[in-house]
Length: 597
Image 1 (cartoon, one colour):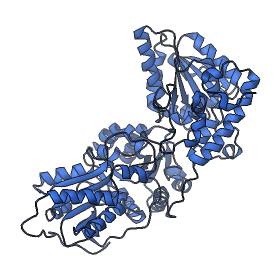
Image 2 (cartoon, rainbow, N blue to C red; image 1 turned 90 degrees about the horizontal axis):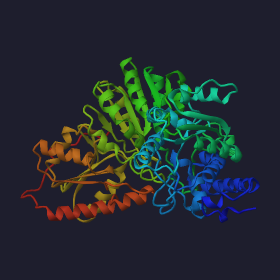
Image 3 (cartoon, rainbow, N blue to C red; image 1 turned 90 degrees about the vertical axis):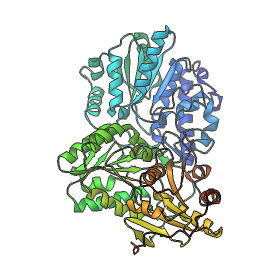
Image 4 (cartoon, rainbow, N blue to C red; image 1 turned 180 degrees about the vertical axis):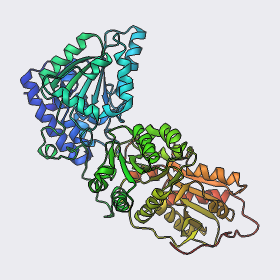
């Protein structure tokens, strides 16, 4: 019997007998469980595609045949079979394997696909390119989960594929009835009907695609037969494979909530503080008891975004639209039009997909909806596609939108209450992944801003954005050791720029802004523009993430690499102040501090 370490590429699979393939399957599952429970990652989805991935690599000749994955978190088995089994222990670790396809790792990773519902458009475009160039000797295969079919982009692509019988794309539908949670909506009901005996004509056939299935996705020979039949049709075809998420690992099979969709590795323990997600979820559930107009909206992630407690208490006011962020935002605008106040909870990275809806449906109509963006800033293990480092730049473009960045659990609760009370347009809260840390009390206020540290020497006004408060306070201490005075303020609501901030800035030699987002178009840029518009000549130094795609790694390490540490910021500020001319007279704070809040 073959050993898994002897499989160095897909070609090593093709001469194996059915019995030999059967011996490999449990080895792969054992490796997945051992590795992923240590590193963290998406265990359940990969346990469910072991046989399916083997069949794909036995029938198709990757990388000559192009196998595209949606979403890429189900590609661990693909990585194992394409020569990376020995590196699986480094999965999602700094410098190790990515948790998604990565073109720098292997020629078998065609696209770095990690957001759902996109692969069919990739496949349509690639097949069109093959036809234009006269390429007829290689296949285009797109693997998509049933959960991803709730995304509108998938149906835009199916519409195009169905109208093009000359483009032979093989669509492998991995139907395990769930994304994080069970798949919802009419698509899920249709697939359930297809799994029953005597099913009627499929929606795919109505669109013009051929259909093969349903087939048992855990029977390698059956899947191979279906794939060969599909490839021989020479036209767009859907191969419907029924699989079980978490297959072969009892704890995953018994996990009714997520089937071990994602698990955490055995990393270092946190500081014992509650997570940002749990604080938000508990506070929203509390507010839901006071406000019968509050509605929670999720895009297939009730648990991960903290909406579970609200959903359990108020199921009639909880909406899960599936993986469909665009629909979530515009439907929320519709809920607001009907007199409710929806709270749409998303990962920050997924807001990118719904920008048009936020701009022209919610903001243009001044719809009072609240977006809560989890995993803002550096997320760590999931890499460039999941870092929530674009939200501040995007949101600053939206007229009439109010944006809050809480620094701790107390300000998160306070700002969530303020957000859902606002009726003049959309509001947004954003916070990072992980624990909130200890609360950071204000020592006073200036207008609506919290003052976290005050120094009579008015050298630098440090403007802290959200969770960067501790870093700013550390920078201020470092500056004090250099004989430089720093006052630290937390605007709390960073959009629009507070008029009090502009007035306060007049009394300082330098304004420095610190945000865990891209610097281009972020809070620092908005403050600099507002100061210029107000005729305030104080220079501005913006600290943020470098404007490039950042690899996966621990949050602290990636922030440090971008210079976002207390000592790093202090060093840069000291350099800026040394180069700046000193005023003839000491600067004075033009606004007296109010009492602590």
